[in-house]
Every structure is written in structure tokens, then in C-alpha cells.
Image (cartoon, rainbow over all chains, first blue to last red; front, top):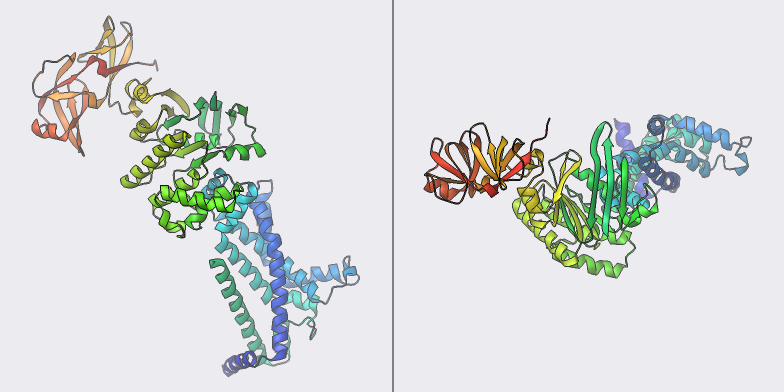
Length: 228
Length: 361
């Protein structure tokens, strides 16, 4: 119990004192996961709309696969990226293994199913009549998609927040393709893992609290944006 | 030339046939009312006209051009029409944005949009609601937003699907007034589906009766309400008295119809021996306590079986050998002290009887 209490005071201390190392790690976490979430959203929202608005054979099966991939282990995604981008791998010439770029790609792959799946169900939540109303008011296909995405904005935003949450909290991929290198690829989760293995539980828990604090800030900002 | 022409349209949802070989042409500027019970296919027909759905079979011509089942041309033509749905679906946006969206989609210039939206909101009486989220409005207000959203586009064709079905009487009156105002002002072609007879009668140049996916009869209000073509239409347009009989005499257009218990005189050209229905609208029957001298050819002693108050009018059911229902003002009911058991005379004119041929079934 005292560990928790000490961790809490330590977390506050680290935050207030703006400990340069913690700020650096937290900043990298935010940058990597924020970028992966943004890029994945730019790809997934239009793609999800495309899947939702088109009827094609195997659509049901595709959605089932997407939903199954919600549970893909982070370490498996890490392994995939590692095999692809390692020096000897087919994409090794990019030379990005053990950099934050590889981490971003890994996290994008990781959260793509979540963004797709939850955006599709968000669009499903918009009544068929809304789509018909837009169409009969003269909206083109693209205009209808945009309107429906706006109608579903709360649920779509929830999908994005979910994706961000999964990205910033994962460790398997970050560790495997990033390598937890100090000053280069160390992020909050890999730092927590390292501190734990070195027995500094207080610092580990404090870093965990900082991660949650960051998530809270992101949530508040996004919710504000959506209410505009 | 007609603006919209439907040729032999058929449509099914799975096994269920909704439209069966329907043809119809609508002239420019015409107000056409589609009446029919729920499930007759009115909404489906409007959806097909609005190009929201592709009919299973048949063709649609707009302005003389045949409309293909897919492609860009459909959007262009759809943009010349506007459809007001039965349940108003407002977008989760401000009232202003709701009304402006159709104009924006057509690439209208920003300044002109503002002017048009403000003007139409004033017409529908929602000028103070511009910045309210449309989802927070009442049903009647939401329907007015939906109406404004369609009207601001100044469509050539306005399609209305039971626009007042879910509204209270006050809102209904408001919406009806707006619709007829628009119809007269802009000479908009309108096709309106309704199951409310009075609405059909008030606004329409022409009425079509849709029963089980078929357009059974089209004509003006008088034709439809007083000379229905068959028993089904007669039932639907409120001919409460439909009496089975056989023509036993026809004297220069005045036919005598023998029912099981009485002989009814009616204006009809059907020959002797024809099996028919004699239809009498309940408002065409007068009730009196004693036999009255009048030009009316039909007067039967009857016994009242039931009196039901319906606001200003009362529905009086009588038995004069066959069941005969009359609509009587509330004042008459009180003055004559009409109640179950009262003996009266039911009187109606030969011209008030509409004869329909009985189909061999």
C-alpha cells in the first residue's frame, strides 16, 4: 500500500518538477502513438465508409476478420514488423528498424482493425433514413459519406480514442521493433517494464500514472473538439 | 407532355410484391394525391419516383427522358426533386445547417445560401431557431425544418409521404397551409401520399387510389369519392353503406335495385338482371321522425341500433331491412332525440346512390 502512495507522490513530483528524462519519454510516447493514431485514422475512416456503403460478396466475412483482429497480440504485430523491416527482411532497405518510425508502423497495423471495426459499427448506428434523406436532398455519394460520418461523430471519435488507447498502452510491438533504447526509442510502457524488472516499483507505477494522465488530457481535448 | 411518366412498374421486397404493373403520368404543375391504406405501396412508389430505389421492372421517364438504373444522370434528376418523408429525419446539426445542406451540396454560393435559408425559415415560422440543434425540436417543428430544407431548394417536383401523419392537429393545419401556399406560389409539381381523405380532397388536382400495389382508379375528388369504381375503392373512400342487390327494372336511367328486403331507386344505366352494389355515402342520408314529402325517391322506415358521437357529427346506425349508416349533426340528434330503438325514416335521393357492378368472384 505504501508503494502505491509513494508512487502517487512521486508521479506528482515528477510532473511538477518537469523531470527532463520523464518529459522526454512521455513526449515520445505521445508523438509515436499520436502519429500512428492520426495516420491510421486518415486511412481507416474513409476505408470503413467504403466498406459500409458498398455491398460486395464476403463483406460479412471481412467484418468478422476485422473484429477477430481486435485481439491480435501486440507482440505478434511487432514480430511481423520486425521480420519485414529487419536488415535482412524484404523491406530492410528502409533501414528503419529500431527507430520510432518502425514503432509507428507497428502501432498503425495494431490499431487498424479497431478503427475499422468501430467506425463501421458507428456508421451502422446512423439510421437508414438519414442516408435516404441526404440522398434525396441531392447529396452525391461522397457528400452522403461525409454527412453520415458527421452524424456518427461521437461514436467515430470513440473509435479513435480506443485506437489511441491501444497504441499508447501497448508494449510488445514497441519493445520488439523499437528496442527501448534510451534517448531514441524508449517510451512510457517500455520504461515501466524496465523499471519493474530493475525493482524500482515506485518509479514504474509513477510512470504508469503519467501515462493515464496523458490519456486523460487527450480525451478531454478530443471531446472538446467534438462538441464544437 | 407529362413531366413524370411511369410505365408498367413492378417491385418486390423479397417474396412480397409491393407494386404490380403500375403506370401513371404526372403533368408539370399538377398536384397529384396518392391515397391508399397503409401497406398499399405508396412509400415505395414515391421512393422509386425519387430515384432512391430501382424498380424491379418497368421504366421511368422524366421530362421525356428514360432514366437509367444507375449513373450520374440519376443524381442530376434527383436534384430537381425533393422528398419529404413521413417521419422527419433532421440531421444532428443546427437548424440553419440542416436547411442549408441541400444548397451546399449543389455548390450554391455562401452569401446566397444565407439569404435563401433566412427567407425560408421565416416562411415556415422558425426564424428564431437558426442556431438550435435540430434534434432538440418537437415533432411539428422538426417537420417544418424538413419542409424548409426541401423547399429552399425550389424543386420542380415535391414528393410528400404522409407529411402530417405523426403530428397534432394544430401542426397538421400549419403544414397543410404551407404546402398549398407553396403549390400555388411556385407552380410546383407535387405528388403526395396520404391515407387522410380530407387532405387528398383539399389539395389535389387529381387523386389516385392505390390498393395492393395497383393504381385502381384515378380521377378528380368528385369522381373518386362519389363514383368509386369497385367495392374496394368504395370501402376505402368512406362509402359506409354498400348494399348487395340485383337490378330488376330500369326506367330511362332510373334503376330499381332489389335488395333482400327493399327496393332502392338509383341513377344507373345498368340493365335488368345485373348483380350490383348500391353505395350511399352516410352524409347523403337524412333521418326524420315521420315520412316526409320530398323529391327523394328512397325513403324507408328504420329502427336506430346505435348512436356514436364524433365531435360535431354523430354516426347513426339504423336497420331498415339492411344496415344503413347516416351521419347527422349533433344538434339534429338532440332535437329529434335519436337513440337506439327510435323509429325513423331514412331518406336519400336516387342521385345519391352510386351503383357498382359486382365482380364475379
